[in-house]
Image 1 (cartoon, rainbow, N blue to C red):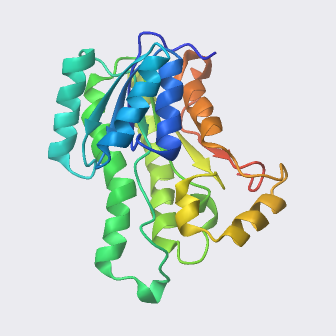
Image 2 (cartoon, rainbow, N blue to C red):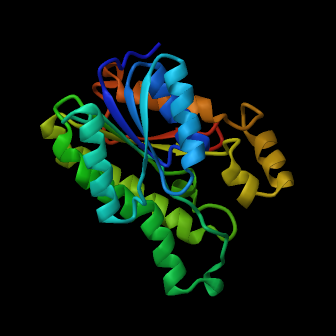
Length: 251
């Protein structure tokens, strides 16, 4: 098992799907986990309960991570609960909102998607970095869409995830001299409510069949990869946008 005992982790968007799996895995590995959510307290508390029942420590903290004031409150809550240092930050929060082709997008929609995926990652990173000692790690969430442009109607989402990939590289360069590593994951087809909402069942089946491993990924597999990236086992990896898609797309 990946060893993260004594570490403090913040996971944004941790009340469901990939964020949930990441928080639970970090807790299982010994980290004290801030389970961030925007508006689903019950789901976040379920994640906290699962971590604590397994012997870990966790705390649910509500914050809209597109808003600086909310993030500041989340940081204050984290310091009160777990001390003055944060060793792991996982920026999972984000979303597609809906599929819209170019002609159906307006400025407000485009900016909203950017805010959810890019601005949130920037704001949380900027707020947490002052608490991160040397040896800390940030894991951002991009997407296969950031590499290949996404499926129909995913222009804004794919563009935002491409920006997360570039932000990851830039932060790796900027924060590396301080001993902070920054990487991102680029998931492909993962069995989550994201695809329940935005991807037709027949498309999911087709993609799974075309993937060399002949299946969708599982959120728990993403969680395990995040934990490893956050650990000392990955101490010489930074600036990487790591594909995790069953071989569907090679970088």
